Image (cartoon, rainbow, N blue to C red):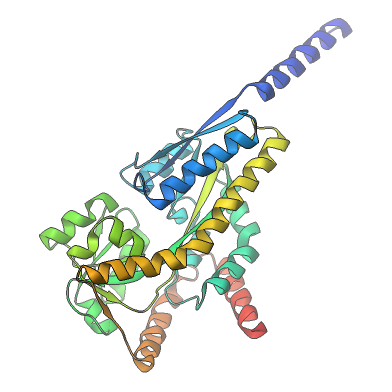
Length: 330
């Protein structure tokens, strides 16, 4: 190649990159979140903020409720359609996130977010291996067990037919190995499963149980928080690479504001959801501290097997170390 050709080729390449950076980028953001839920509305506000802050250079189109399951959404995300997603079960793309769902692992939201902060580089690396970029976390309240009949012990819980997410074979086998009776279903089939008796127990944040009407068929809630309901917003590296560094920072700032809003508002939203369900017939099963301690101790023994099977050992150990350090500092 002669010098003249090299100069022309370089100029064309530079012009192409410049044109790409100037062209408005449209990102489709998918989720299985219900349309018009507080999460859906919050995502749409975040999208509006991003378009405003970037002067229209980046536009986010929120598509809530467009996939029948998280697994389907994850497959579409890997194929680049959509280019971004809210994953309420991020373990669908990176098993390291399973550590956030270990029952009774966290005692408070502050403790959970301390561990999340310390594990963020690990999560970012795991997502990068899948061609994804982490934008933010989303807190949706604490998971509780809702049941059709009153449940006060783990042994009674084992007598129920528990919903578990279809496609999560490791969780299905863990339930079975520990004496539970799980029934894998798509989230969209939970209400039908409850009404037909296929299942009669499920873990859920109170707001979700209220929003989707699940509590009508399972009007008892065990007042023992299991785990924080933490999702993530991610974007494909390919789509992210088309956005300028300046606009990437503006997008991250908008995403962080949405994360902070959810974290601030979720506790009050959870309380109001429980109050509303109680007014409609929900019974909150309150356990004394001795029973709660027994509940947690038994569950701790059961979930110890997650290390090395459902959670990479180094991730599990780091989470334990950071959690214990947080407790020691209080």
